[in-house]
Structure formats: C-alpha cells, structure tokens
Image 1 (cartoon, rainbow, N blue to C red):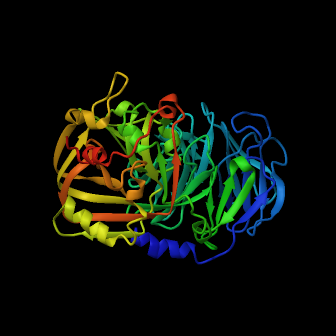
Image 2 (tube, rainbow, N blue to C red; image 1 turned 180 degrees about the vertical axis):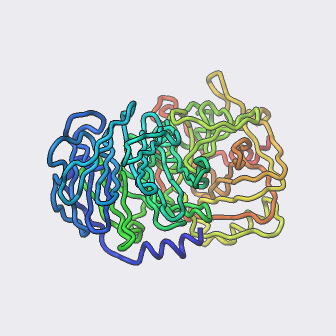
Image 3 (cartoon, rainbow, N blue to C red; image 1 turned 90 degrees about the vertical axis):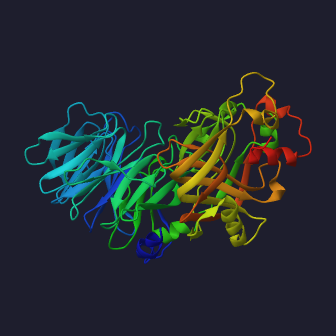
Length: 525
C-alpha cells in the first residue's frame, strides 16, 4: 500500500482542478481518445434492444461538446458501449455487432455481426490487426481479426465487462459484474497464460478498466446493481497486489484515463452526463470511507432477537469490512473484501449470497490511516494492549485489521436457534462450539468501540477471524503470532439503523446487562 501512496497517487495528483460536469448525453457508457480527440458512446433510452437510438458524441479535452451526434452519419447505432481507436478507425461494440468508423470523414468502414452475441460490451486493441471484445450475457471474450473479420473465443468469464490490453507488457485485463450484480472480480492474463483473479480487492459491480502504467490499473465500480447513490474508483498495484479506492458518484461506466493530463473521464450512465476529475479532487469528498454503520441493537440481539431482517446486499452498500450475526444466530458473520462469510457451529465456513439476512451487524468501507508490524511473538492480550496505547482517543471508534500467520487461534460459533421464544444468548453459552487452529494464515476483522456505545454495540475490542483459504473462521477468543500486520482506521461518523419487524418494535429494553455481554464476548458461562 505504501508504494501506491508514494508513487502512483502522487502522479495522479500532479494536476489539481475542480471536477467538471458535462450534461446533454443519453445514457453515456464509454469514453475513448486518440490523444487529440475525445468520443463518448450514448446508448439512448434502451441499452439492451435494437431501437436505433444510439450515437457517438465528440467532446473536447476541457469538457465541451464539440458535436453531440458525431456518429453515425448514415445507418444506425442501437446501444453502443465500449470503444477503441485503431489507425484512425473508431471501433464500437453495439449489442451483437462491431462497427467501425473513420473519425476523419465519419464514414462507416467496418461491420461485423458476432453470431450468438446479445450484449457486446467493451472493446480494446490487441496486437496489430486484432481487437478484443467482451460479451456480458455469455461471458465470452472474442478476438477479432479486423482484416479477415474472423472471430475466435479466447476465454469465458461470467458477466465479463471491461477489457484493457497493455501493448508493452502483453497483458490483458478484464473485470466482471458478478452473477449477483455486485460480486464481480478483476482478472489478468499474461501472454499464453490463463486469466487469473487478482487478490486483495473487494468484489463489486465492475465496469470500466484502464492501464495507468505498466504496474497500476484504474477500475470503475458501481458497487452493486441497481445503484444506491455511490460508486467506487479503484487503483490496483500489480506489484504489491494491493488496492485503494475513492468513492464516486453512482453508475460510473467505462472510464478513460488521460496519461498526459492525469484526468479521469467518467461517463455517469444513469445521469446522462460526463464527469472529469483527478484522484486528488475525488479524495476531497470521501465522506463514506471509514464511516461506521451499525444495524440493530446488541442488547436486543443478546436478548433473543436472532431472526434476520436486513439482506446482505443492503448491508454491503454501507461497507465492505465488518462482522455480525447470520440469520437465526447460525454461527458467526464476517465481511471481508465485500464478501460475507458464515462460520457455523459445525466448523464449516461458507460464503453467503446477497439475499441472506442478518439481525445485527457493523460495517465500514475500511481505509487504514495507521499501519505497523508486531514483529515479536505476541498473544491476544499483548497485541490489544499495544493497539490501545496507540489509539489517540479512547472515546473514538476504530476499525482494525490484523493479518498474517497465526501460530494459534481459538474461535467459537453458536448453533442455530429453532423455536420461539428464543433464549437469551447468555443462557445458551453451553451450546457454543470452540475451534482451535494452528499455524493458520488469515485476518482478524474487528472494531474498538468506546464504552458509551455499550448496549447499542459492544464497547472495547471485538474481532472475527477468517482464514486466507476462507475455510476457517469464527468469533475470536484467543490468538497468538508474530510479524502480524496491524492496520487501524479512525472511524469518522456513526450511522445506526434498526429493524422494522414487530419483534423489535415490541422488545422490552432494560438497563444494559454489561456482565451478560462480557460473558458472551469472552465465551464464558
């Protein structure tokens, strides 16, 4: 992460200016430039059907519309999406065909129907004479010979969307939306290798992908679909395999990064406009990063309200890092990189789908402001004491990530409840199951919260564990290890939401039972 901050971020910030907004488009999807001229694809009112309502606009580098309907001069475009420019020819993906236009005389010079395609999405130049185009419905990635018009499928990645090729390194990147419209990933292919998923980036509804340089890429992320107010723009460091994001406005589609100016051109698809910004400008408006979101009330949860009421797809809009309880108490819930995992009393850990419900959870979009390594072998008490001494204000909230190889871990999980009225959690401590893990790579996900939040949440430290192979987990009781990486984020704001069901409405709150809460946290009867 340090490499990103000291290197590529500085490069992106070398040009500081206010974000520009260009209105007047019709569901803009993609932006491309040949280094002099800039073009925007407009899908029209329907992005899926052949209605003839699409067109290409030309804009200036400084954000003015030069020609709103630059293309086509003759013929039609239906729902044009991704574009690339090869030898003065603008190629565009248009549902089931690739069309090509000479950008000087505006004449149609290329047309190819790809059999079976329904939603050709993004397009990029490969080696001389070839382009690649993605098809989101089938997941096919096509390689097209633009001279012979021959087509071959070179890979299949479900819900594939953005694509970008590096002419120098011969590496091909693609990103996907995810089968659940928010669990997509980033993939890299080098020369003759297969596509491999890149680690250490939260799953999302990825759309556009661009090379910044040979080691860094830029990715637009709707987070989920349908949209809910915000998106993300990611920088990924291929050497360090680390990622960093800024929050953007919603529905940012196929972005363009201008290497000469460090400007980022972002089509805001559902708002019919184009945004032009840089990383520095985006960084000034990051009010959703390190924002603490709390769903439910822990007094109600430990008092027996275990039935889930919030879908995980809604929880993920509030954060990609956190912990909580699965539906019907069944185990422990851990959210890592935007994915939710359930560790059950059987010891099995599984990934949950977006429709799974939670009764209580705490999440944030995690961005560390303090990082250090605990080099010496340390147990839980030593590590937490070290962290607590570092915290500048004990009455603030903190999100904490501890990662590395743990020589020993002890976790627990509760079995599911079945019959109402459900018992209080302190009364079924004898049913919890304990797990001991030795020499395990993984991450502790947790929070340090001030004592005045007791009753709403649990004051002090609270951690869940997830192994790197995603097969082990649970609520942390003990741990020990050395060379542990500790990342701390100061949480800036607090948001709370509560269930609307009758069980919560009729729950009788009494004075916080601190002793019962302490027993539950420590797993002691």
